[in-house]
Image (cartoon, rainbow, N blue to C red; front, top):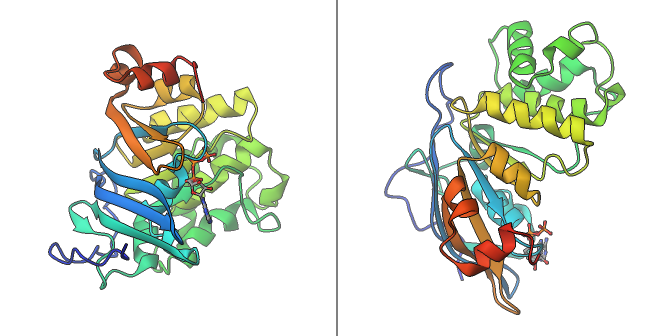
Length: 278
Ligand SMILES: Nc1ncnc2c1ncn2[C@@H]1O[C@H](COP(=O)(O)OP(=O)(O)OP(=O)(O)O)[C@@H](O)[C@H]1O
């Protein structure tokens, strides 16, 4: 077991985000394992997430999908007793290089959670602008950035007349898109989404899926979802995680989404995607 400081060869992740219109960086993990204390929860996960594509992580509860997601932007290390091994590369550069600041990594690899978490008393405008403040970005036209982020999150038309209303006054689905806009304001390469629709109604879910489709090419997206139809609709690539009894989670099969759903190689993948377990 070790904390992940073994790969200094490629140099640290630079703080700078991609220029507007530039292809975002892709992500790759090599042999990532994870522990909570003595409990090993992930076993040597190696995956490639292509620049500007949507990758869905699927699998039964407890197989380590969220842990894997949180390893990608260095949130796992915030848990007391958590450890990991392996490599995480953003655009070929080591996310865990000792010289890389976790805050810079999280600026380039944003995260949207299961439950929308805007700052409820802050205005819609300030919620989006807070992304800039938290990331220490200065010298930009805030109005322009806020509008652009809200447009990219598919929320601008609904809130342009309510920018000074509290974020907490929006519907659940709008709040989730506000959180997406807050992440987008700092121009991340990657957006991690941990079951972003599980607290939303079907219409709001559809709007988030449309937003994901619009963001494809602009941002590399990794989404954890329990909804197989959603994984099939939004993703280009898919990875199926599975943990055995008292065994850590591992990737059983990964590939183009169509292949995972239509022609899976492993019978356990077929059983899972067809709802026969999990
Ligand atoms: N903070 C923690 N401390 C200790 N163990 C944890 C912690 N978070 C997760 N685990 C354990 O790690 C394993 C993987 O959990 P994780 O949440 O990553 O799975 P998951 O596939 O995302 O599950 P779900 O689909 O239910 O969200 C589980 O056994 C879980 O109990």
